[in-house]
Image (tube, rainbow, N blue to C red; front, side, top):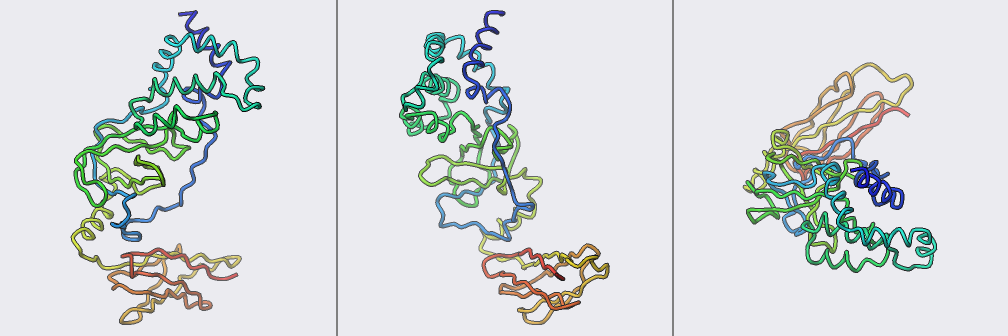
Length: 311
């Protein structure tokens, strides 16, 4: 046990970058819009073969976290002592080798480790890409050691998920926009294929969510699939830039429909118009001056607008 801990500690000293899997989360940033658009605001594009929207039940999710990888990583270290010894031999000159553009032992170690731990998750094309990676920069770009795979049973397909089973990938960590699926959970899934890839991906910024949190989106998608159109709506928020801002509500007017509609904003500047036909609308705040924003419901069933007033 002491020897194994010493061996693993030695590898960590030699390869700090390799142990991203068991160490701190990489310095990656995931930035999402404050509010994700609902499907009523951006309906699916049935002509896009690189997008899929469906309801699915997760039958497998691996690895669930970095902790799941640790036992396999330690097993790999125990069973690949020859590579470890080669790496020890090369480590004093590793910097010079990388500067010269030569393939380092570190790269070969990382390739072997990825195939050992994540090999079942790689397609034949990805296996070849992994083996052909000429340097660590290219290896990092592939990112095969920083992702998780989810397998789902398709319960209801809207677009792009015609088979009964669906496999997709997501990043290993939330800071890299990874989505944390739960085995046995049922989700409304929005997946995509990157350009030139044959694998589906899901990110935390997508409209993927637990099914019990997706009632409005499900209603929209089922109507869309049936060829129906739900009544349109416009939700808005008035941002008062005056200093200090006025505390009184605003009168809001909606133009573009069969008749002019009016409402009064709430105490935080919120307002809404419902039961709207398809068309292009103009939202106007008529006091203290005229401010307006447009809202297009010709290719969507709802819209959100922010209307700034004052300076």
